[in-house]
Length: 509
Ligand SMILES: Nc1ncnc2c1ncn2[C@@H]1O[C@H](COP(=O)(O)OP(=O)(O)O)[C@@H](O)[C@H]1O
Ligand SMILES: [Mg+2]
Image 1 (cartoon, rainbow, N blue to C red):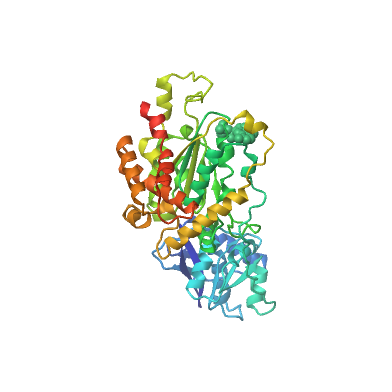
Image 2 (image 1 turned 135 degrees about the horizontal axis):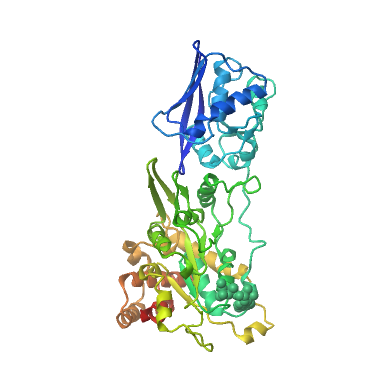
């Protein structure tokens, strides 16, 4: 007796269709799974036997052969349990409703319950692309699956429900589509809490408006962490496409839940400085996404940048530029997107007071430069904006004046992003920070006086080609914030200021 049931597999972010074929023949009792299963898949035999027992169905006394096709793709995990279970029922002629056009994903537990799995979102998206009519998923993952329109999602709690549905005894009804809410800015930290610090706030507004990487440097207590943690409050809302892309990564990492079946806010990730390279950029024998990918379409905040392992930081450089990372393993290579804004904060030296207007630094030049050299020149180059955070002034702290709330800043950011959306329509670029060198001339037109000023700054400061590109992009964003299509002199001047750090601190090396 033969049966075939559809399932779905996952490698990295890529889902692929799996056909579960089963043949039950009269021979010595045996139960085998072939088609490159890993140990977890092979163990599903035990879970299936137990689940059948739990609903009083005797396991066939025969040779049961399961093939997971295509046979040359590795299958891993417990996701095919439910499909194999259904295939056995069908081969035993115990079903009345056809399983054609249905896919099954879910893990069985020994008592017949269906347990949640990771990666439901990309698998359901694929099922819809492949034209399947319905997909049966664990109840725990049903809200996540129901985000996808155009396919019926059935939430299954246990095998009893599954059996009664396919025996036409008690039909399950498809889950209602989940309509994700708009990005909410409630209950998040607000820039209104930060007194004074006008220039740092302005710089962060520019970073948010153009999607630029920024590094904040300043003495302890100057408010670097405080400022950075308020960035989510001024980032533009996620589009649905961005939300789906980010949610897929969160789905395979197991970060989605019934309460949050899809990501609707830009991720803000702030890993501790003890994080490993695999934790930061991704890795493992079955490569998992790292923080840099979990933050996709959002913000990665590295506080105390100089405390991070230097090698770990260097590994991050290339993916930062490419906006994706490919991890190669024996099992195959996986590519994860990582289009992020990087915000980093650090003290200028071990004691923290180098360059402080009143407190004396006790480190000595040697210690200062060895501390700063933990951040390599090429890494520093990845930051479009260098923001010096001065200690907060007493008059600002004691002032009664109200600070501007994040919602006001965000309005300007969103307006600047709208100009960018128009400019980059039909390209793969989404914000100024992503303009590629070959497109700089086209997207960053300057007037004559701006060009002249830029030339003199370039010569005077001996800028690198990379610094040139970055200043121009930041000037582009400042122009956007001012509603100007052509870049003027004052925007170049303002943008050039944000490259001051490599001279003031790193020139000592
Ligand atoms: N501009 C400011 N307005 C209000 N409070 C501030 C300001 N700057 C610093 N603080 C206070 O000082 C604390 C330390 O700031 P923090 O951001 O941790 O400094 P850093 O990260 O630069 O060492 C903050 O939690 C906050 O209470
Ligand atoms: Mg701090």
